[in-house]
Length: 146
Image 1 (tube, one colour):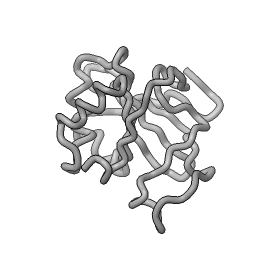
Image 2: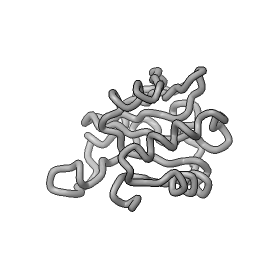
Image 3: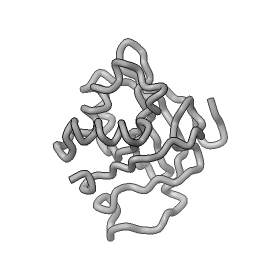
Image 4: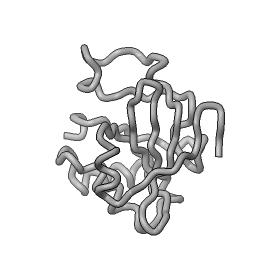
């Protein structure tokens, strides 16, 4: 079921250009094959992360990161377990289960077994985040770090 969406459960590398973000500017992140005309294609310059925004939940906690690629792809990535705010998990769960393709239990399992790191493609984040009470704040772009 989880293979129908892009859920890349990742092992923490400790690198990143924005707080404890997994991806850094200049790294590659592909969209799911169903979002790319013609199926899966090799990484290109368009897959390069060019911007990282903090995703902020009330009352101002950073619950994850919004990665933007050069071709306009948007991905939500969670924080590492060590930095996950207590109030953040319900928001993360809602982002991951938004289309009914994953259950809360599956999301919790991924996060528990991957040090909290997981990334999902969010093509509709401009509608989804405000509906959940989330906002974004610029954190890093290619060549910068915070």
